Image (cartoon, rainbow, N blue to C red; front, side, top):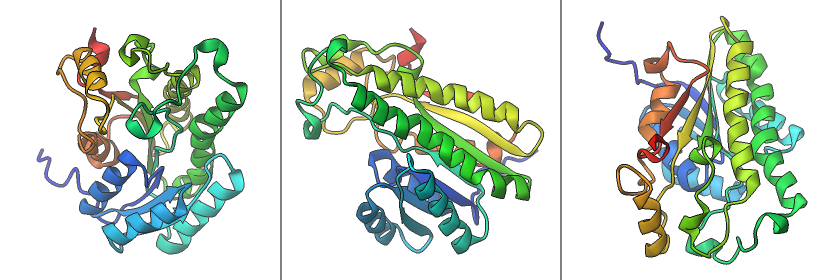
Length: 265
């Protein structure tokens, strides 16, 4: 059987949260290139509009706070009003304490200094936000009898962070690992819940992305991967397109790990 056309997304409607972020931009551009209509949802509405202006008319920018049920509902209503259906959802929005120059000095202190307020805010966005988005697309997907959901995970949802690579620059906080581990559990729950309905749910687990980090950090991180480097920001687009397309039609409840070999040892 030929694989021609299996990766084709022409005419598909994809809701992408966190769409104006570092990786969200890459996803949006690649999905549009594949022919998809992309609803770019982001808490930074102005950034979503700028991205849509850059990418073209197949993008619909929406300002959304994924931790708010009302805001998520409004995003889905706008998508349905514009396109008439929703074929896919990518739960990409997350609070991720990055260690690039723009976030220098934000990660000092160990476990005792990690605040409950920050923990609760991160879980509200990273976990509750994904849950609310899945709830909101349930009716249109169930009505159409098909749909695809991809929950974006992290290596730190599978293994504990190697805090030594941060070398005194702070620690990766507990809320990030816990929230990304929850994405795997949410995927399995939903895949089982929608078994036999035509709705598929998978996790895409990512490694670190080079984003003008300090050279010493890049060196330490890279030494922990089998491929000896961090990912380029566009290297996850192929995996996401695979999960959203018919190329992965016999795949649900799974976790696709693309991490340069970080979790292999």
